[in-house]
Image 1 (tube, one colour):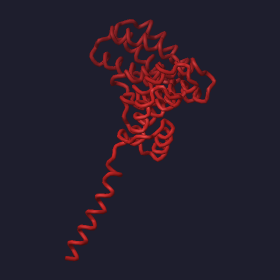
Image 2 (cartoon, rainbow, N blue to C red):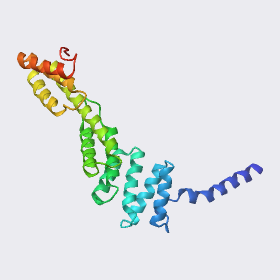
Image 3 (cartoon, rainbow, N blue to C red):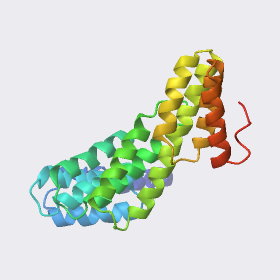
Image 4 (cartoon, helix red, strand yellow):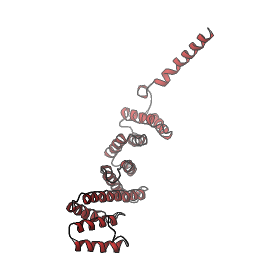
Length: 241
């Protein structure tokens, strides 16, 4: 009997808790745009990203013309990014940039979008679409805000990304050489040397191009290139792949 009364007490207590726990935010009335934004920011600070996303989405749905809408759209993108929702985060950043091109937060949005793309970039030898998108985003940031708080990091990221592309090109040229497609190796190598002359991979690209030229019988041009390679990078000119 005592056990039965104990079970009934637990069930009654649970019944009182269910409405407050299961009620969805979208069904709660009386919340202002300020309430939703403030609560969303609190959830974001506590790393409760899913809840933060819900608050920001409800705000944008209920109050699309709110003065808080621009900040909310950007906060939504941030929450999506932190939650690992890469596709949704990129869309949210793009929506902010499209809807609020005159906002003072555009440089921040571009920087965050660049960081999102940067971390998704593939290793050399794989598809470099995200790498190219990240480069475009950082370049746009530097065009709009060349001396802003994100400029230094953006410039460093651009250098890293360009070197990643240069390493990718070196892999492609090496692949052509291994398949004895020397004309393709030469063409790709020439373009890469011209395009990535400011990267740390330049010496490798020059060496690969020299090898392609030698394999094609262009001995004199290959020798000139190796001479230039020795002058720029002492000790590299006589090394072959």
